[in-house]
Image (cartoon, rainbow over all chains, first blue to last red; front, side, top):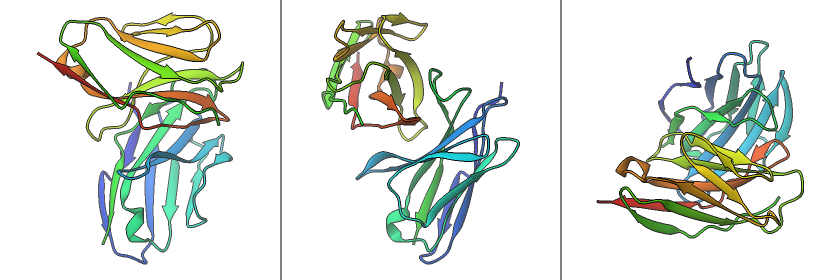
Length: 113
Length: 108
């Protein structure tokens, strides 16, 4: 079966711009989580959606937002980009919140110049 | 959130078992232990998870101590393709809190 699909794979943006990243979970998975990975901070949790509702949020500024659609696809948006937002953004989906493993996508590498 | 402690790096000869330890002394009774690995800058790959009992799948075995304060991931016959960063994670409040992981280097 198809895995978690993230688009685009690579993105270059200018400071001050905004960006939208997309994630299509595995068919049937209703939980979608987003993570940011940087060399300095490692992998950090951004937020989690389940059935179109945000159920948990990490410690990130309000410039980072997300949403989930009725088909479980999810988007995350970063407004007013800063150089420090350059990172690999990873999406993960799960069949169930608790005791099933999360499957990660290959990520979107965002570079802010 | 329950924290995990892992050695920063380990070496293992190809064909031998790789035993990766993890300390999670503050884990709560209903929190799962997950193991993931990340190769280069790919997305993390799920390996195995457990609550109390030892678990085994086609990739690895997970041994959890009786007091649940530590666990060991065992790759029975490591290959060069197992070279990666391995993360031990306590799953809390619907999120995976990644630490710095163990960089496993498998050598010939």
